[in-house]
Length: 133
Ligand SMILES: [Zn+2]
Image (cartoon, rainbow, N blue to C red; front, side, top):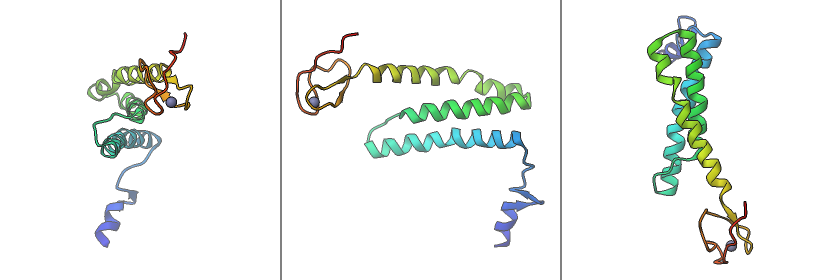
């Protein structure tokens, strides 16, 4: 188990990394950004079809902003460019998701939230009255 101790605690540092506030921000960004793949994979396996859950976009946004902050701190142009524009599609996807959610109609029969443009409730079969806006 000496090798394990050596891996975790190396040269008097955790994982041999010289920790600072910026290192924590960078690694937090890495962790959040990496976690999105597992969230997407988990939901896809659970639903047995390819799904991109809304959490994927939130994790993408949070992770990329942390990585952008870290890259700006590092003043590395290659690293900065990798994260400077990625927030645009993440926010756009979150906006479109929000609009789609708001376009749902609540069934007067059972109260289920029904997808936009549906004429009948997929749960109870009641005719839906389109929401007036
Ligand atoms: Zn219904």
